Image (cartoon, rainbow, N blue to C red; front, top):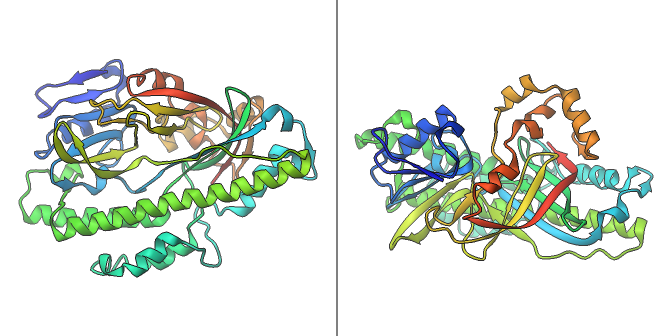
Length: 410
């Protein structure tokens, strides 16, 4: 970790990388913009997977006094990870054949049929305790009439994956056991909430002649204002919805895994402890004797003893970790490997053939309906997850190392 503190910064920027050369120019500029926010608490943190985002770098963490910043949470509010281990050894199922190919291929195919991908949704509304509760507490939300239709619309998306970097993976841990990992968020709900309140914050900031420049794209809301309270209500709803969304997909995937393995192996499938955690959100926490709003945009909370999930790229490795409660990072860590290439840059740099050959050589079963954009999420487009982990051993202790064996992508 090194500290950036110069004429371009007001507060220090702590960066969990070797030196400034490891940081892209746009990301550095955004970090400096963050450091000039007048309500910042202590410093800006950049995790080792950091790269430029919208307003605030992905892999960025800040603590703010009495304000909340929609773009410092991000458009996929509550995006995060869900993980569960099993008692099944991968070597016992790898060579089993079914009427739909290998057992791993059969599982991947069944998950693709059970879970809507990309912009797909369910034809009928799904059960949702989160949305049922929102309707019962509608007075929290009815001031924002433009957003109200999102609640009913959410019943058709809960339990759906989405696209981009979201995935459902079958993985093998370092001891040879099959595990399941899911990466997804709040679907359309979170993006609509972010865009709506970012626009509203910008309007108010201009009215207040705020010293936070518009070009920073970091418009803020005082948490005690009506608008700030409304954003917090909608943000928390989006987080709860994202949590439920991942849990619903995990339930379906576990049911498929259990049914097919028990059918073709005759061995009872048992599941271990689930870890469901966010990496795009803001929360009121106490750090350095102050109650502040910690914004984690592409960063994971890792208090001492807290378990979390840090995914790598498709076909690479991922980690389950235990937090060390590092105060300097506001008890945070990276949320993944972090991009080396933009999606369009990866498409130009790596051919479909190169990616598909690489996955085949690694023995990875890919479940993806259209392959034309497969390079966007290939492992070559991301940083080396092991290098990222090496930079944050003061934040987390690796507990499991997991290798992709099957993956469902939008």
